[in-house]
Image (tube, rainbow over all chains, first blue to last red):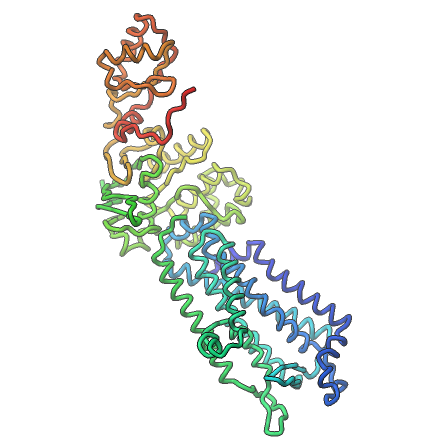
Amino acid sequence: MQIELFKISKRPRTYIAFAAISAIVLIFQFAFKADGQSYMNLLLQNVQDNFDLNRTNAINGYFMCYIILNTLLVQVPILVALIAGDAISGEANMGTLRLLLSKPVSRSQVLMVKFMASFIFTVLLLVWMAVMALFLSMMIFGTDDMLIFRVKGDESQILQITQDDVMWRYFAAFGYAAVALTVIAALALLLSIFAENSIGPIVATVCIVIICTIVSNINVPVIDRNVKPWLFTSYLVGWKGFFYIGTNEEGLPIKGSLENWPAIRNSLYILFLHIAVLMGIAMLVFRKKDILS
Amino acid sequence: MNLILEVNHLSKKYRDFTAVNDLSFSVHEGDVYGFLGQNGAGKSTTIRMLLTLISPTSGEIRIFGKNLASHRHDILAQTGAVIERPDLYKYLSAYDNLSVFAKMSGIKVTRKLIMDQLELVGLADRSKDKVKTFSQGMKQRLGIAVALVHNPKLIILDEPTNGLDPQGIADMRNLILKLSRQMGKTVLVSSHLLSEIEVIATRMLIIHKGKKIVEGFVQEMLDPAKTLVQLDTTDNGLALEYLQTTKWGTGASAAGKSIRLNINKNEIPQLVSQLTERGTGIISVQPRHSLEAYFLSLTNNESHVEPFAN
């Protein structure tokens, strides 16, 4: 593991992902600092009459992080694929795979170490996102109660989470995102076994994510029932569930509660199942594969 | 001497193509064992099977007296290899590359160990430089250092002189001889260059189309009766016509602008004098390596490219 992390840390491409996240977050922060109120007015145009915005500093660090994550967590799979898709195919392309596998380490060990390294990279990426999108935003925009804008069925909702109830939700959301992105890492790693250059598995992973995301967004009953529940892309944005606060009979938010914990838990089960199946297939294929590179 | 490597009835098939066909051979302790064959003969496939990179279709490999399939970890811990090109991590320094592979070999890595290995292959002064700045010869030497760093008993080198300049080839040859004679290592070296094997190997195997052709001591195969001579005269047509009426006629043939014939080395002066007496001027007589003649005769002079003639 130490060797694998050392190799990843020495590759310039590793830092592309961190630089990309920094750039996007800084652009968001600059834009909202300059003209965030226009965005807020747009969001509130339907509800301004019955919601008192002046009660809170709406564009605060918590709100900013939510907006950034909403955008970034769709793009981050590409950054994860960049590393995981290169894990085996990159070694094959460089010619180091045959040297690596002629050492006294088992192929299962090599694959698991590559997987764990991809997981650690994913977690570091999310930690960096937390630093940039959450903590830096808190410094720039300050803190207050968090407002969540949500469309549920035909109705638009604004959820208000008190600031002392926010932080644990972010930790949980980042944890969930780590699991969801690990599915992408496992998929990219599996595809990486079949290729002898990095481009193929990276592009293939991104294509699969795009196709599955499109299918996840098709609202046809037969797909809703039979396909969507099994697509990992249906659960990639499941982290938002941690910000959907539970309400009492009067419709008032209950501090520390979740609207639908069982749904989040089931999503996690399915994501873990995806990781297990993808890594199981990867293990079977890699152990039998003839190394001809 | 102890048997280090034993290959029994090894085969590898890819659908309809048989890359290695019922191959058996053995390597003894201290051997520099030449593994010879044309490109595509099945050398690399065999070597990859010895290193568990490819699984055999059938047959058994025993190294250090143990079955490779069931004792992979123990065997590979005592085996070092350079497989075809010495591909290493280009973005790491020579020191880091060696350190990474040494750790993967399961040994305790110290700075002294790494620097000693780099010294052995003449790269100590480039230890901090990234491999992407290295020449092919330097990469090859670093590859050897990677193969040696964990002090293996058996060293497998697949085409180690590929892509090297003459000085690099000479350095590699000396290094292999040093490994064998000074350090007591057993070396299996594959090559399609007979001249290389002839100089360094004690025993050798010739493989052709995946099958063993012959195995034995190199010296026994260096038969003076099997010298191949390339002859250039002032009138090759006339000379060939004449040669075909002599005892050398069966082994004589046109090869591009030259004549090629098999002849006992001791008979070359006689050949020259007979042609000269008949008024045919001799431009050059080039004896080829005896092993090359032997190899060509065993593989039926199969050429992939028609001789060039203009």
